Amino acid sequence: MCSDRTSIENRSSLLTMEHIEKVFNGDVVALKDMNLQINLGDFVSLLGPSGCGKSTALRLIAGLLSPTSGSIQWSGGQSLDDLSIVFQEPTLMPWATVAKNVWLPFRLRGQSYKAVKSRILNVLSLVGLENFEDAYPRELSGGMKMRVSIARALVTNPRLILMDEPFAALDEITRLKLDNDLLELKEKIGCTVVFVTHSVFESVFLSDRIVVMAARPGRVIRELQIDAPYPRSGGFSTSVEYAEYNRTVSDALKDAMALAA
Amino acid sequence: MNAKSSFTLTIDTDELKRARRERINRIAKWILPSTVLVLSLFIWHFYVTINEVPHYILPGPLKVAESTVTDWEILWPATLVTWRLTMWALVMAVAGGVILAVAFTQSRWVEMSFFPYAVILQVTPVIAVAPLLQIYVDSAFLAALLCAWIVAFFPILSNTTIGLKSADHNLQDLFSIYGATRWQRLRYLAAPSALPFFIGGLKIAGGLALIGAVVAEFVIGRAGTGLGLASTLLEASYRFNFGRLYAALILISLMGVVIFVIMSLISHLALRHWHESALKREQ
Image (cartoon, rainbow over all chains, first blue to last red; front, side, top):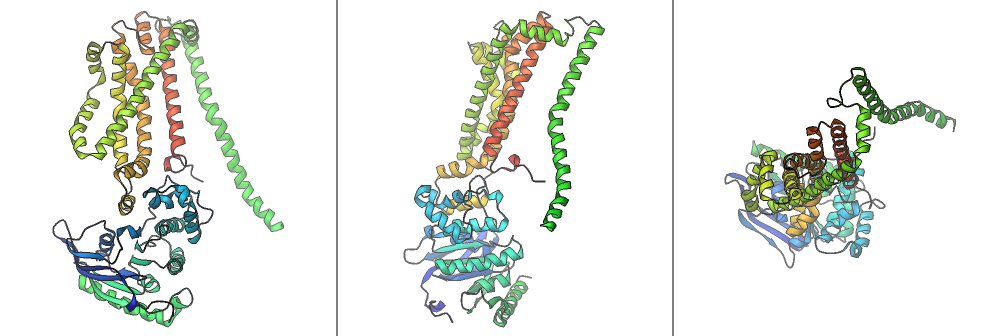
């Protein structure tokens, strides 16, 4: 295995969700008794059928929702300021250029464009969009828009990046490419990622931990560890190991579906 | 090289066809309406001369042109008055509409309290309000301005209010995550999202401001306080001076066209980079 990586057990905790419950409109239980620990450097996928509360969990972590009961504890000095989010849609401001879109998190913290310009250009080249800083979103393809969205999430160097099915709306080829690039970026930057997806293959390829969830009520039914070393751009996606992980995760997902039915 | 040139050739026949079609369209866009105009003027002229229609029923185009020249001393100052009236009404409608829309979206209480009255102001026919304004407001210009404003401000208010509320939900969440202040939300998210809606309202308000000004002049100008073009038009009709009446009518129409062009230009300049309405589709 990769030697310079802290093994999963030794990573220090970033945040802990304890007995989280979220009820909408008084009777719709979106999440029931969710317990999850996220450690620094993790790539955790939340995998499950629609209605299993995976997006709700993400929004709880982001502070966009507050839990009905239970608590989310951030460890030592970490806080909401340290996170960014990537949605399923690129969620760009159509009236602003690529660079101005990436500037947004800084702008909202009162930092001038000039002061952070080099960081913006830097992150744009990191996601493969050098020379596109003056383009408007409408001039870009779906994959490129998603890259801008990722650049915006990365530019502040957050400790935690939340991704809500970010590549679900893209075509398969673009999606594979972005999956690969995402792993590379994560290695380079060393951030923590919580990734919501409904694709078994994507979750196995990307994650070191997969949290399988079931619906009605939304809850965690299994946590699986994917021990394959990073980087995984080489032969991982065609290996026997990958196929076996896929089967294990698929089985777990089937169990989740059976529970909901 | 050979393969490449034959490839370009196959494109060229199509391209040539399209280029020709575009060229024809470009010319036709001007030639056709101009032809219609000239033809109509001819038909009008010959109808009037052949049937010997008296000029106090329908003046011929030459008579109208003559009136435009001889009455220019009357018509031009009147045009300026109506123009000033319309533009002031529009500027005030923009200011009032936008300020109120921002207040509505910033505070639900303000919206609940005042929106019904904004609607009442809008649905009450201005022609019914104008005589009252004439009584309460000393200056005829100011009374007319108020009338035109009442008519013009509502589309700006309602469009801008919808626009300010129409920001993308994920972007709103993003702003929450980054801890945006209320002002930042308004300035960087709600306002740009509202811009296309506001401009839609502005286009309607531009036309309505002129209509409001004309209606106001009709009602208020009747009291002998001649105002602008519409008052001139009304007065000309009392005097059976139909040459002047038509000249005034044409000037009012032209003013409407000028307003429309200005609004379209503003819309183009504001939205050309990003909004669907301003984009030319390829193919």
